Length: 468
Image 1: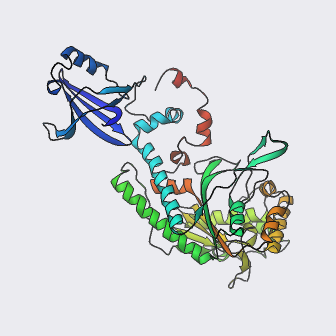
Image 2 (image 1 turned 120 degrees about the vertical axis):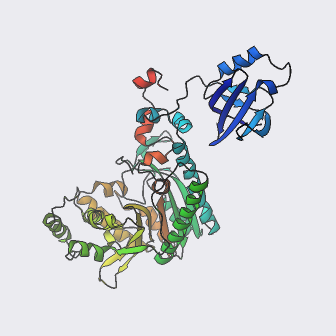
């Protein structure tokens, strides 16, 4: 028995009405012809009353047989009057383009705008594909703590809260699951992954939201080349899968990018920056590295970040000179060590500089994937944590928020012997933006960005006037 919401209806005559219902994105046309209903089942006046009572948005059930109209359209020819299951007490709009109304009434937006709903359905397909890809590669899916007494695994400002169970301790929401997942590698789980929410108490714009979804996997004995090849295989396969779905099912979407076949192009961080600025970078391990970088910024009339610490200055050079070159899928590889404190590092054979065994995948100038070989020496990791603290003392509040003190618990765990391990992280929201063809992160979140969610708690004059 077909069930669904009335999308439209057309009263053709006093004895004939066409009713279109939609359910789960699929439309069905039905034909209710008074002359074809069972004799004495209903009077003509009752039939007319039923037609007048029809309302767009009502949920009904239908019983009939498949057939064709006089114009040859495949339809359900009803054998009895539709049964009302739930009434829609508001006038369902035919079109909803007002931005504020769409934000405050996201459920109506999904009902009216096919593209809004298709983006969310495609998001589910993306997550399912990634999950199955990793399961097929013998990774174990796990869930790690979201609430803890310290946030680690990234450089970011955490959200802080408290617990009635521990009134004297400050709690934080996780900014990344990385350190938890590496503890599982230590515990003998050679391949693990997690898809879940992370929280960073930072800016909000078209590509950033304080609450976001990531996928991270960790694989024992994987090196950087294996991680890059896995990334290319996953992303290309996913792109082909979503292209097929958009062509056949989610036809309202129109992504503007077609990913090339691997291998993707690569940019070696330090040589590429030096070529772009037409001069050599200073010795990054020298105490004079920051003043010399500031002179490079001044000579090129670039505003330095605030505070101008070594990692931030190098990130800014990448953002200015490398990332804009990454319209097509491009890996930026071998970052300076100070940018990647959790990554294993080595002496670059061409430049002689200490760099990280790390790669970032950019598409359309935006980062999609961050992957690197994990630092597994507790001695080297301690040195890098101390270096982070030094940047904090130089005024980097973001580093201070992550490691106000050296993470002794994690260092102690490393003493049990972390095998050579490759780590991989992807922002699901940005990936969905790319594959669905939207430039706003709120479009791929079920109820929009944090700004939209907060706005749901406030009523506007349009709500009070019953616009929807």
